[in-house]
Length: 198
Image 1 (cartoon, rainbow, N blue to C red):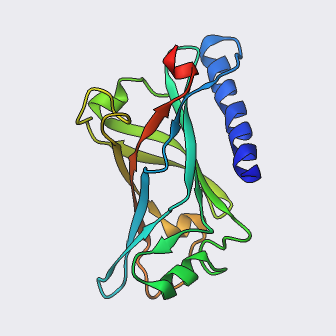
Image 2: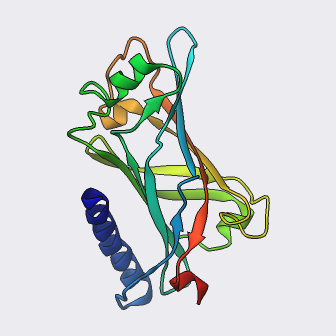
């Protein structure tokens, strides 16, 4: 939890800087929603012999900020200590170990989105941001599906997906066994905070 708080504080500074560049004055930003525990953050990888491995992050935290200019920004933290490969205990140990996520040294994967228009959750489209994984930060893009309800995140999940390359984050364990592409998928549920209910 301490690591998550520190991550959010750093992300909040980044959000404030972005806002100040856009509107000319840095202002405090309060979360308007938090990510619910029933949200799902998963990934898939394919072995060289075409076996599909499904992974998931059971422990995830994050929130949504309302920026002074009316746009939104999302912050997400996924715990690598709890990452698991479905139905494969051996692969699970490998994923948490030093040749892949190295959970003791890099305990989380974080994502800080660029500011986006609030209507993006309804219409769907691309969401850009900064993904930090295995101690390396890179810009990545996720694609949001159009919402299946009026209040995405509340009455239905926000569905998004994106593909990253393992090599870009030095996740090169088992290079001969696993392909380079990792496909992330998420179904996000939100709970409005007091700030979001004003």
